[in-house]
Length: 250
Image (cartoon, rainbow, N blue to C red; front, top):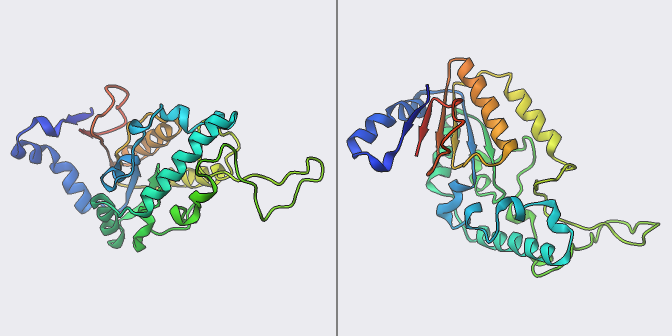
């Protein structure tokens, strides 16, 4: 049965007692998986999806490339995010991840964000499944205020169309059925489901992205089947479909 803890409504002493299972698990468990949403970077000034001018499913969608006005909006959002990240620093939670990694206990970090704050910390740098990408791998000047996608300066012009291929941010958008990194990410996830972890923490995610939610559910189910613990931490948790967690903290 899933236990829900609403920290803000409890006295400190009661909240501490309710949180003891998580505190003990974070101190003692040796094989930890973290699945983190955009919210862990909010304290660094990086906007979360709820702060966007439109619904995230509308903004971060391949359909935004169907007309010049929408493309310009998306390009400006990516450029603004990049500028924010360039002046941001890892948050306290990032440093918690860093500490667990240095102890050799963080075995996988799935991160639903593109800001690269995690890989600013040396212990969190990785090549699996993809090389680190972040503001240093994105040139906002190419996209800011543009109503179309910039042409690739290193590609050959197509013989039939007479045009060079265009560039777009390497971000997995809604309705993006041909995302080039999908197979690499899926292979890592499939391999992880065959391993035995003893703690999975889903943090700062509202479980709204179906593909990410499926991954969370699959990992949590596998961890619990092996005798481990599955925890969700979010400011506001969904009201239903949380039976794959042992503990939900709001």
